[in-house]
Image (spheres, one colour):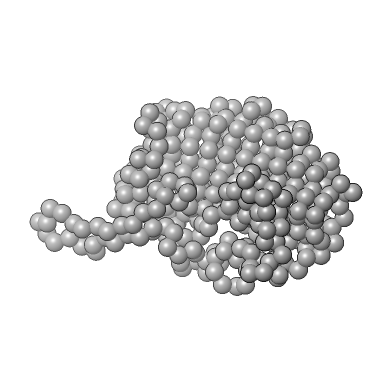
Length: 353
């Protein structure tokens, strides 16, 4: 673990701007890092706006003490669905040498955190509590579990959630005001999967190319552009003042007269690969002959994108591996002969763009 962590952080250091500092967080016994808890890292006076917190692989959640983040930070984790021994959440093989992700307890984004970005983290409960109008937060390639992502009763603008996996949890904004909300190429998997966003206001909110599967709750969207999604749920959804185009619904969804090119009563067995083997996110790929293939409305330069998380211009990536150089194969000697000044290490890397 020590050799792996050191090599990984070296690659991260090469990928960030030289004027910002990278800090290592690792709670594994015997590993030397800058911090052992996330709480200590965020609290440290030496960690300033623009710095990067690299949260290394661990089988245990990182302690946060329910901290409120008041700095502009880049927070990078390992990705998820990495442990080959986890039968509940099967892994994607060959994507990351580490067997664990970077699980984080409750965190709150408050005043001063505007412009922060979170990549490749496993997040138990994220609260956006800042009343800053332009919060401009980005969550990308993250796993949300337990309580998911919640907007507090305040005014928020500029939150982007892209290429994330929500396992039996949701995004919720039931009070206050949320504008410039973008939710693209995410997967919502399991009972509570979806979005409950009656607090959306304005005309620049986007819910596009998302995939929902096996959810028993309804999603609520208002004042939103809703396109190229796959709503695989047991209940109908609520749309108010929304533009609704080229979506698939597993139920007999009632839509407004302005909705176009949507399909209802779709058998999800015909849409997704599904099955009981492989990682949960790989099961959300479109199967051969799926009606959702090339069924979407134009996104950027893609005129006939696939619907769902794996379509359009910036598709979902398996296991949420951050788009930085990472090690996906590593061979380290079990022991080193006494007196030997060197050891041979073999590793392979990719950029994950």
